[in-house]
Amino acid sequence: MNKTLLDHINLPKDLRQLKQADLPQLAQELRNYIINIVATKEGHLGASLGVIELTIALHYVFNTPNDKLIWDVGHQAYGHKLLTGRKEVFETNRQLNGISGFPKRSESEYDTFGVGHSSTSISATLGMAIASQLNGEDKHHIAVIGDASIASGMAFEGLNHAGVTDANLLVILNDNAIGIDPSVGALKQYLTNVKKGTEKQDNIFEALNFNYSGPIDGHDIPLLISELRRLKTIKGAKFLHIITTKGKGLKQAELDQVKYHAPGKFDANTGELIVKSNANQPPKFQDVFGETIVELALKNDKIVGITPAMPTGSSLKYMMDTIPNRAFDVGIAEQHAVTLAAGMATQGLIPFCNIYSTFLQRAYDQVIHDVALQNLPVIFCLDRAGLVGEDGATHHGVFDLAYLNCIPNMVIFAPSNAIALRNIMYTVQLGIDFPIAIRYPRGRGRLLNWKKPFETIEIGKGNCIKSGNDIAILSIGTILKNVEDAIALTETNESIGCYDMQFVKPLDENLLHRIFTKYKAIITIEDGAIIGGFASSILAFANTHQYKQRIVTLGIKDQFIEHGSVSQLQKLQQLDTLSVKKAIEELLLFINNN
Ligand SMILES: Cc1ncc(C[n+]2csc(CCOP(=O)(O)OP(=O)(O)O)c2C)c(N)n1
Ligand SMILES: CC(=O)[C@@H](O)[C@H](O)COP(=O)(O)O
Ligand SMILES: [Mg+2]
Image (cartoon, rainbow, N blue to C red; front, side, top):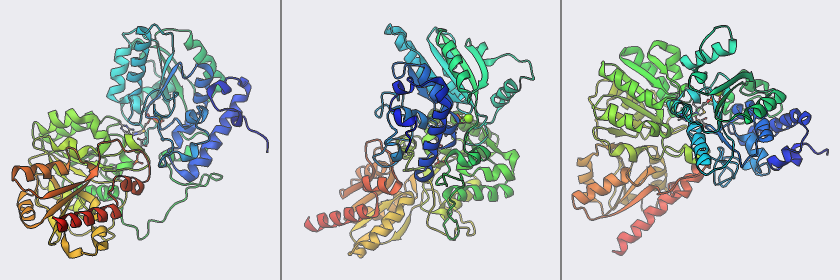
């Protein structure tokens, strides 16, 4: 078989040996390589396909890794990975023990900054550029950021600072007019106007002291190379605006850019999605949220929905389609989303602020200062709580219980199933005088028949699932299913009591007193960090009330969890059914021996 150009490239130095005229062919080969692997192994697709020419041009013109290249979010860096020594292992992308789906410093010297959450690239690049100055080094520093990511507050903080330094950095805006969902906001309108060139307007980036060039066609390799070479000769803060098409080179991905952001499995030849049937499948928690908020909001006109740039992922899109004037996609702006919700709550609206658990980390001060401190009734729906799987360490929602637990006034609820999610949403819209976080995982539960008549949930009340004689398992959230399965496998089933505690805060102290009075030992289980989370609260409760039982705490240990399937990761954290069974058996042995 004839060798391809890509066969000859292991590192960017090999790429730089190619004739410029060969680069379009390399672009085609890179695209095919990515499509073939993502088609079966899954992952992010459209963003990488859209920046193939840019990726080639950057590594061709700049002396990476000495020159620093930082990808914002990093979901578009598959081409970069292939050109920087990871071609042979790319098929392990996002799998357990395989390479990460995002740039990661420990993986390659070409991955100059670890990413996953958006809008960090300008600050990080500026930091490196200032460090180079102070170290007396002559380097180039390049941030590549998308049109949705640049609209985030943090990106503007970076631009604002960079514009008054003489640091040597180049910000490349990869403008494809879409995030995961279509980009939103006034900046999007501004960028559209710039591209149309129809309206005379001041240039925002020039106003911020950047040497602006563009917009240029980001798929034109010769143009990209000549422009990058020109910019290389200019010192200071530069801004290059390029226009690309997300999903470029795969027809379906260009046509349905939302779906092909991360399409799951598809036919590499035709691009057609390999769709699994939803028939007889329990719903995704996202859809339970999305359908329920519509159902409630149609009856309660005070309800509003907010998402920072994740309408499809969170299913708030259902409300945006049905009741557009009360459902808001605010762009990648978690901090704004939280304080917007706080403001709405002061005026009697009932805001459901839906944020992925991992992304709420960015709005921690807003949760404390703008919501909890003023005890405002904002309803946080924390999607993707717990282990999310292949996105890995940057995206697991395992810190929320811990970081919310210490905030006064905050109520924390983790439904164990779809009905509980639905009922808590119903309950809180009836009226609350505190903020509440409702956290639920990525994907499907177990209940097929979940659309039951609404019932109210008593705040701070746990449920006994099964009574027992020796060990009580206190569970929070959907990990309960592993507990139930483990108990079913345990021979001395009658020894085990099982409790769905529902609330991390306030704890159901009456129930806990009954449990601690009755049982000889306790197991706590959560799919979140043990330190500061549910286990910590139970340990504190036992200490306060001087209960002396042995308490075994199952949850996420004090480490960052890498990528892999949720079941593989649960196993590694001893949260899977068999590990829970083992913990039960060991504790029974301990009780019998003491
Ligand atoms: C802080 C944060 N919020 C939300 C996300 C989820 N997210 C990942 S990619 C993306 C869209 C990025 O769009 P853009 O910057 O335009 O890049 P493109 O995908 O178009 O290349 C979003 C919202 C994230 N990674 N980080
Ligand atoms: C890159 C990024 O942050 C998102 O694309 C994220 O991977 C979405 O996660 P879900 O697939 O769980 O919506
Ligand atoms: Mg974009």
